[in-house]
Image 1 (cartoon, each protein chain N blue to C red):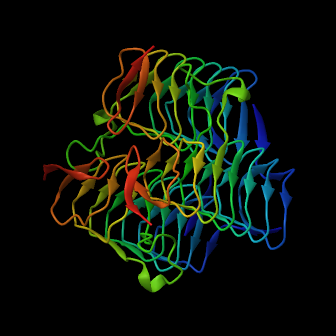
Image 2 (image 1 turned 90 degrees about the vertical axis):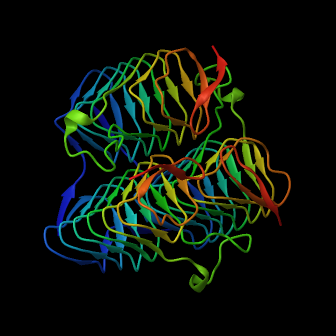
Length: 150
Length: 150
Length: 150
C-alpha cells in the first residue's frame, strides 16, 4: 500500500492567506486575504478570489473559480463531472467549469452542480444547485429554487 | 501563507472522554463519557452533554448545546447564521443558538438549521431541519417533516 | 481526555493500492488498484472491490461491500443503522448490510441508506437513496428516484 501525505503542493498565494491544517490543496491559486478551514480539499486549476473564506470539510473540484469575498460554508461539495454518459467521464474536456461571482454565499452541506452562480447570490444550507443562478437572490431546496430575490 | 495546526485548544472535559485525531476543537466543553470521531470540528461556546457521541466529519458551529446521550452521525452540519440579511452576518448577536435535548439522534449527512430539537427526537440521514422540533418523533426529508411520532 | 490517532489498522490490501493520508481505515479489505482519498473513514468488515475509487471526506460504515470499478464521490455517507426503533440500535445484528455491484457511481454529497445498488447504477450528487436500486439507471433527489434508465 502506498500512503501519500496530503498537504499544500504547488499552490500560488497572495498576502495574508491563512490555512488550518490538515488540508489537501494542489496546483491552485489563493488570492490575498483568503481563509481555508481544516479538512478541506481544493484541486488543480481552482482560483479562490481575494478575501474569500472556505470553511472546514469542503471539497472544491478541478477548475472552480470563486470571485472576491465569497463565503463557502462547511461540508460543501462542488462537482464538475455530471456523469452525463452514465458514469464518470475519463476525459476532463467533458467536465463543466464552475464560476462563482463576487460575494456569493454558499451554506453548509450544499452541493454545487452548475457552471455559474452570479455575484451576490445566497445558496441555503443543504441545497443542491443543478441549474445556473443568474439572478441575485436566496435559493434553497433539492433541487434549489429561488426563495426570495435580493 | 500562514499554516496553523488544528487540534484541541482550550477545551474543558470530564472523565473518560475519547477523541480520534485529527480534530479541530476549541473553547468548548465535553462532559463525561463523550466520544468524538476523526475529522470533526467543534467551535467555541459548544457544550457536548454526558455520554454523547459525535461521529466522523461532523461540523458543530458556535453556541450549540447537546444534552446527554445524543448520537450525532457522520458528515452532519450545524449552522447558526441563517443569512437572513442576504449573506453572512458579521455580528454573532444575530446568530441563533442551537439547543438539542437528551437522547436526540441525528442521522449522517443531515443539516441542522433550527434553534431547538426536543429530547428523544430522531432526524433521518440526509435531512435538512429548518424548523424547531418540539414533538418526539422521526423526521426526514428536505425540508424535514414528521414521518412518525414516537 | 484520551486522544487516539486515526490511521490504517488491520487492513488487508492487494497490489497498487494508494491512500492519501490522513484517513481512518480499520479491519477492512482493499482489493487491487483501489484509491482512497484524504479524510476518509472506512469501518470494519468493509470490502472495496478491485479498481474502485473512494474520494475525499467519504464515510463508509461497517459491513459495506463495493464491487469492482465503483466510483464513490466526495462527502458521501453510508448508514447501516436505520434507527427503526427510534434511535441507534446497539445490536449490530439489527443493522443492514449494504452491497453495491460493479461499476456503480455515487455522486458527491449523496447519502446511502439502502442494502443494495445494482451494477452500473448512477446516483446523482446530493441524493438520498432510501430504497434498493435494482435497475440500471440514473437516480437523483431526496428521496432518490429513477431519472433515466441506462
